[in-house]
Amino acid sequence: MNLSTLGEFGLIARLHEKLAPRSGVQLGIGDDAAVLAPLTSPVVTCDALVEGVHFRRDWASAYSLGWKAMAVNVSDIAAMGGLPVAAFVSIGLPPDCSVEWVEELYGGMELAAATYNFTIAGGDTVKSSELMLSVTLIGNAPQPVLRSGAAPGDLLFVTGALGDSAAGLEIMLNPELSVASSNREFLLARHHEPTPRLREMQAALQVESAVRSALDLSDGLAGDAAHIARRSDVTLEIETALLPISDECRAVAAAAQRDVLEYALKGGEDYELLFCIAPDKVNEIIAAVQSTGTPLTRIGRCIEREDAPVVLVKNGVREAAPVAFTHF
Ligand code: ADP
Ligand code: MG
Image 1 (cartoon, rainbow, N blue to C red):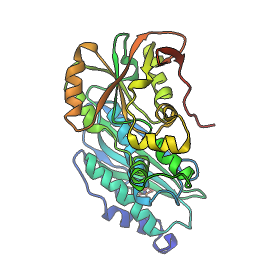
Image 2 (tube, rainbow, N blue to C red):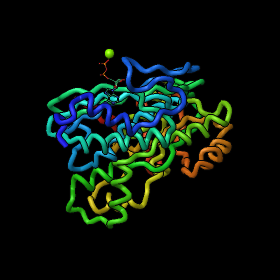
Image 3 (spheres, protein in one colour):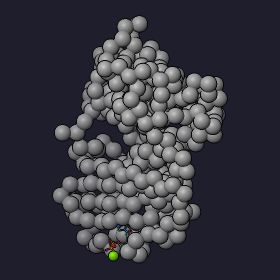
C-alpha cells in the first residue's frame, strides 16, 4: 500500500496498534508528549540510520533493520549499566516506501522492545528524500558505568566474539566469495541482527565493585578501546592472540585473503561489551557473565598511560593500534 493512501496519521495509528505498552511509561503514543514514571538516574542515547550510509534496502529486510535500530541503542544503555525504558522513533520516509515496509520495520523494533522490556512511546513521521530512522532510547542506570573509570592494573575482557559483523559485511560486498551456506547465514545474522549484551552487563554488575569501566563496540575494538584509554588516562594493552574470533569469521577471512585481525580490530558493529575489571574480581566476573550463556574472554590489561592509547601485542611485539572508522 502507498503511504499517501493512509497519510501521516493513518500510518501512525496503524503502527500504534502493533506496539505494546510496558512498565515505566505512564502515557505513550497519542498525546503531544509521552509521560514516563520517575527514574532514579535517567540515561539517554540516540542513533540515526541513513539509507546508503548505514544500510541498503536490498541488503537488509525492514524487520532486521528495525531490530538493529533498537538493538544498537539498547547496547549503549547496556554499556552504561542501565535498563531501557522508553524509545522514541523519528522516521523520514520517501514516497516510494510502502506501508508494508514501514509495518515490518516496526515489527522488528517491537520485537526488540518485547525482548528487552521497553516501550516504543512516541516519535515523529516526516516525508524525506532519503529513508532515515533515528531512535532515542531512555533508560535507567542507578549507578552509571563510565568510560572514565579504568585504572592501571585493571584487566580487559570482551563478551562474545569479534569480527563476525565485519565478516558478514564482507560477504555482502563480495558476493562471489566461496563461503559455506551455514557460515554465511550465521555471519549475515550477526551483522543484521546484533545482540545487545544487556543481560551480560546486568550479570556483571551483580559482582560488587568489579566493573570499573565499559563500553559497547560499535566502531571496532581498536578505536573504541581508545575512548576508554583517553577518558581514563590509561593505555589499553591488547594481546591479539587472545581475541575471541569465531571459526565462521576465520573462514571468511581466509576466503577473502584478508587478515582476520582486521575484522576483529577494525570491523565495527559487533556490539560486544569491552570491560575493565578490577583484578581481584576476575573469577567472579567470568562466572557471573558466563552464567548468561555468553563467553567472556580476557584480552589484555590497562597500564599507565603511554603515547599510544591502545597498544597491540602480537607475538610478543608491541605496536600502536590503528585508529577507528569515522564519518567525514
Ligand atoms: P505533534 O504534532 O504533537 O508533535 P504528531 O502528530 O507528530 O504529534 O504525533 C502524534 C503522536 O504519535 C505522538 O504521540 C507521537 O509521539 C506519535 N508518533 C508520531 N510519529 C511516530 C512514529 N514514527 N513512531 C512512533 N510514534 C510516533
Ligand atoms: Mg503537539
